[in-house]
Image (cartoon, rainbow, N blue to C red; front, side, top):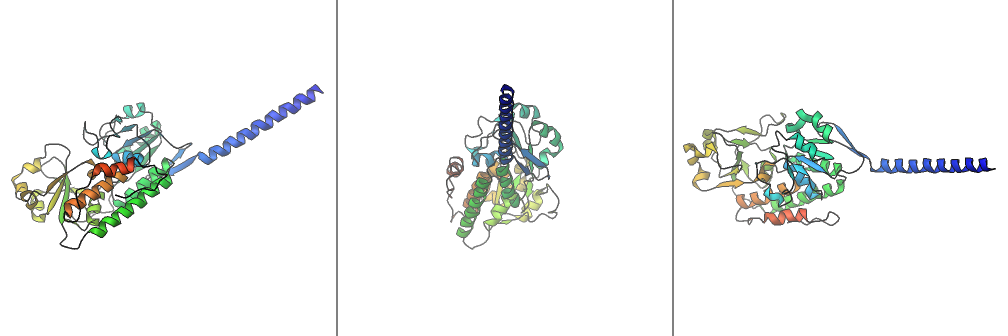
Length: 333
């Protein structure tokens, strides 16, 4: 009699354990998910990551707009935090330059997701993947912006919030374009670099695509080899720049010393003589993120069409992304 009771109790415990295991397995199946990055590599997650490290400001920008605080990031200029992300990057671990991130510090940050520009990190994919799942993104053109935000959203378990961000920007862009009045299209050039000749960005560059959407003409023109990866800029001689003669030149401000600005040829440019040289910040170089692209669009509109657009309040633009709960409708500015 006692043996039968013991056997029945053991069977009951065994069945309960089996049912509990099955329940946990079903719960795991519901929470586990995968994302395929721009290499075609599949990243698998048991739960949504919450300790994100980023090799580029894009990952930080997208994560912050989705309500996730990065723990580590590369920086474009040594000792300078990205002003367009307000104070949200002040306490983030500095991994160094995006082209050569400090992988020892990255491992010390203990991320559960690494978001990175593919061209800077693919050679170190194996080492990165040993630290955490590594989401590699092609960030070059305007199409890459929506796509990259969608992938980061999917990896963070916030796919619908990411879709909201992309829908919001589509509305914002349409509103800006509707306010541009037909007149002579402003001609511009967007450059960076410190050498004797600046690097100029083609139309396909994300930032230039935003300026072009506002009716401006990029004197650098189209990329002659659009199928070639990592090819959205070229070194432009000052003589070629003088012949192109843009109305406005946007110069990425990455430090005080730029040899090309000390050249006598530079001083003959119409944009220089008419004080139409505009120093721009980090978001112009990494304009793919939700906050950066909105900020660039607003600044560019004010410079290209000063009669129709007032200088924007970048703090208000950033705050509208950083402070909003994505359970609420996003408000356009």
